[in-house]
Image (tube, rainbow over all chains, first blue to last red):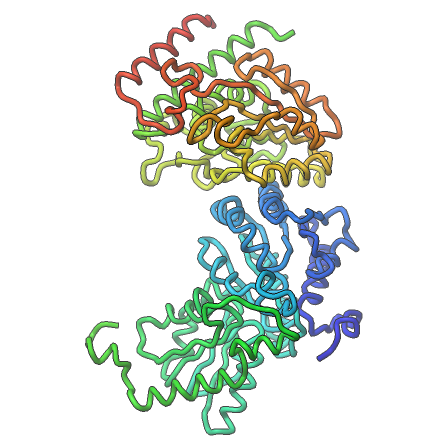
Length: 337
Length: 281
């Protein structure tokens, strides 16, 4: 993995936070309405990149996320495009009611950027790790939820957020991520991206887990299983038709996310596929909080968010499908799904 | 010295607002009578004298803004907006019905003239601060008025916003604290005492003006003083009576969010008509 320091200058970073800061500073140069708020974490969230270039449009809010979210609502009401920044767990959890009432119920043009998401703030443990933020944000009417799979997609997503008018939650990992998103591909909110094709299984993945899903697909191919990988960076609004189209004719579907299995990508895909009979399995965090670890990867392994876990989920689900092609609940009550 | 005619006109307006409040409480079976009536004089002074607003151009960029942070007192704001023609007066009778323009709490997506969605308490001052930051960036001079409740300031976010406004010298923000002394479950002094209010806000770096919130001359004078305070946000601490103008509801903890009988409705309207009769045009 490349270090942040080494890649920062080249503008070709593998770190999603650095890419975010750079992209936002570029966009702020183009659009005078962009304003940026942070709650005493600006060097970590990289919102500092805007402060360095446009100090008059950067507001240090202090450690006060609720005030930050509602202040952003006021800025949006007066025509600005505010980006609020903190760790994912604080800006979604601590300020949930402000996001709900002041921002989402009024459909305001506020962008919420949750940094150090998932387990990526490995050392700080449960309090600083967000494994339920997607669920919280996804349940809010008017909210859009974006989980990019690498630094390239982050850059494109930030531009997409500015072009879109309405509340958006952007979820960013703290860790470097391998380049997997094709720089030539356009980013559109709500669009699925096919990362590789396959006919036996479909893996819908987001964020950190998309690269792992690609690796799982390569391993499966060695064993004669052809698995398609779809990067679902827009978890809401989910491209339901796309999910149905990509799943048509497949033998099984697996979802992979660095988030609780409750309310995240898995649930969104399951809802989209609810009228099909395709066997479905979730790779995600099993209704547990995070904990401290010595590295992000170590924690991902501890919680079963690995290439091996995706491979196993695909194989197990395919085996079950072979043994019992029609799910049991369908056999017992024909006609109901 | 403010002309007597102007004072009387605004007193009449406040009385009309109270009549509309009673009308809405009856129409919707139940409503926040007490807190709406306590801030009626302040709302009348703002909309019918102080604020630069235009119902024929509700989104004009240089307009002054009013955020009712104590959103449950929306009835007072709805009454003023209807009087100004933001929507037909008939809408007052449809309040809280399915699909109505007027919701239980302010909703800018449904009600013309509403500037922010409030109702979950404690958020309005932060929203006002955001507007003031935007005004500063845009070189605009519009003022942002925020009505807070003395129960509402139990919410910690209010103090985050109070610190922020003073730190950033947001002198376009004018908060008005409707100090009616009663919150949902009883007297504020028995629930979570928020006094001493003046000292608290002064220590947070605010320009504090303390007035009788039902004395129209004092209300106007305080709003004028706020405009001349540079480099500090102003809070007008307005001593008020919950349920003001309606004998059976005045300073009565039972009239926070209530249903009223036909008899009570008749009494309230009779009392308010008597006040109007004493205020010749």
